[in-house]
Length: 294
Length: 278
Image (cartoon, rainbow over all chains, first blue to last red; front, side, top):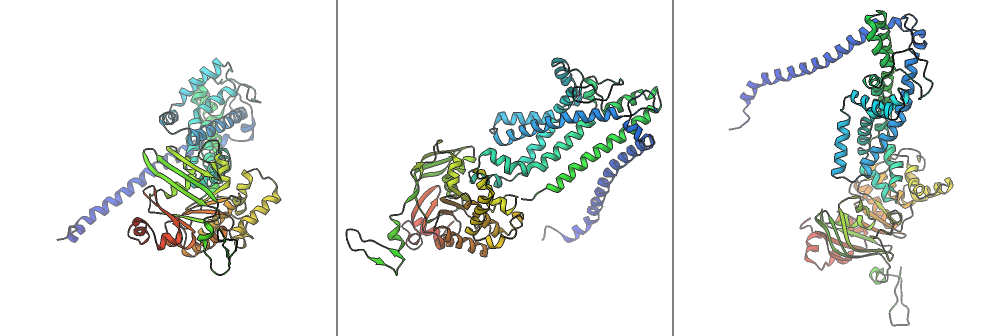
C-alpha cells in the first residue's frame, strides 16, 4: 500500500491547480492596484500642471500673481539644503557605519545602539522637525536658515544612511579583508583600500535614496518655520529659504483663495518628481554599474 | 647532491650519489618554535600543549581530521586567530627567537614576514597588477619602477607570469581558480616574507591546478619556509619534508614525512594515514 495514492492525487489535482492560479491572479491584482494609483496620480498632476511649466516658471521669482510666479527660489533653496545634507549625512553616516561594523565590540552596548538606530529610522519626520526647531533654530539660534533646515533633514535621514552603509560593509566578503590583514595591512589600510571600495556602490545607493527622501520632506520644514513670504533667492547656507515641497504645500493651502495656485502646485510637483526620478535612476545606475561579484 | 660530515673524524666524506635529507636536517635552523601552546575559543579548548619546532626552508605539513585544530595552529603562527574576538592563548611561540604572541611584536610586522595563502583563492576585485602591488604599497613603497619590478618578480616566482603578462591590467576575477590561487601566492611573495603559511591551498582546485601548485611549492622551498595544512594525505606525502599529525587539538606525532608514512610510532597516526578514520 503506497501512501501517495495515484487516484487520490488525481482527484485533488484540479483543486490544487485552481488554487495555484487564483493566487497568481491575486498577486497580479495587487501589483496592478499600485500601478493604477500611481498612473492616476501622475495623470492628474500632469493635466493640472504641465501647461504651466515653461522657462519663466522655472527661472522666475515667487509672486502672488499666479501668472508671474516662478519657483527658482524654491529650487535654489532645495539645492542649498542638499549642499548641507549631503556632506553631513555622508561623513557622519559612513563614519558611524564603519565604527559599528568594524570597530565596535560586538555585545550588549553595540546591539543596543543598533536597535535604536533602526528605531530612529521609523520616527515620524515631524518629530525631527521639533528637534531641529529646539536645537538648531532656538538653542543654537541659527534662525530658520538653510543650515538649520539642512541639519534637521540630515538628522532625519542619517539612520537610513547608517543602516544602508552598514549593510554594504557587511556584504563585503570576509576573505577579502583577511587577505589584506594577512599581508600585514593595518585595519585602516584594509578599510580604505579593500572594504570601502567594495562597499561603495551599496553606500552610494543608500545615500542617494536618503537624499531623495530629504528633498521631498515637508513636515520638518514647516515645524522649523519656513516662511511663505516672498524672500530673495538664497545665495548660501546662511540665508533664509523655501524649498520645493514647502512651495507645493503653501500653494495647495492657498488654492482656495486663488484657483490657479492649484495648477502652480501641480507644476511644482512635476518638477520635484522629475528631480526625484533623476536621483533614483542615478542610484540604480550606480548600483548596476559597480556591482561586483566576489 | 648532499654533503655529510662524519663527526669526530677529520676525514670529510663527500657523498654525491644518495640524497639523505635526514642527515642534514638535524642542523637546520628552527624558524618557529612552539612551546606549550594552548588556545581557547571561548570555552572550547582548541589547542592543547602544542610543542612543535618548524625548520627553515622545509615544507612542514600539518594533517589531521576536520576540527583537529590544524588550521587554528597555522593561523596562530601569523596571529590571524586574533580576528576571532573570543580567542585566548597561553604558551610561547618564537619566530627566529622573538616571542610573537606578546603585544610588543606588532602583528603587522609579523604578517609581513610570515605570509599566508588561504583555502579559497581570494584575489582582490582589482587588476592583476594591483593585486600584487597591494602589499608593497601598504608597506610604503611608492616608486612605480620598483613596484613594476616586484610585480614581475613575484609573478615569475609563482610561475604565472607567462600566462598573465599581457593582461596585467585586467581584473583578477577573469582568471581560472588555479591561476587565481597562484596569483594569491605571487601576492604573498610580493611582501618578501621568510615563511609562507598555506591553509589547504588546493582544496578548491582541480587536479591539474593542484599539481601546478604542488610543483610550485617544491620550487618555493628553496627560498622560503613553508607550513601547509592539508586534508590530502597523499599531498602531504608528496611535497613535505616533515609532517605533524594533529588530533583533537593535540600533536599526536611529528616526524620526517617518510617516517610518518612508512613507520609511524603512534597507533592513531597509523589508523589515520591508512584511512581507518578521518
